[in-house]
Length: 83
Image 1 (tube, rainbow, N blue to C red):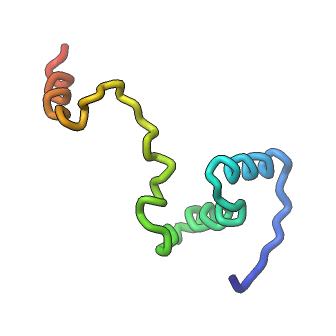
Image 2 (image 1 turned 90 degrees about the vertical axis):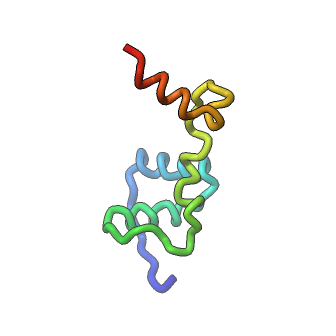
Image 3 (image 1 turned 90 degrees about the horizontal axis):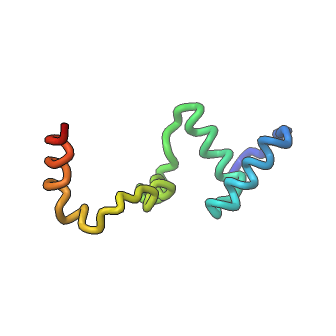
């Protein structure tokens, strides 16, 4: 890193940043850098693998259907034909 920036944060934002850092196991500085990249439309950090970019989404959906991956077509067709 070449430059250091000091930013004053309101307590609410500081606590939200601290909590996000704790939950994700990511340093606060990296969260701030990523937020700036997104806000400035600079894209994602190319050094991060694609799976790391969607890590927060993995395992976030629960269908309750144990064989959904094997019988997805059958379930999809049943959903489309329901009235």
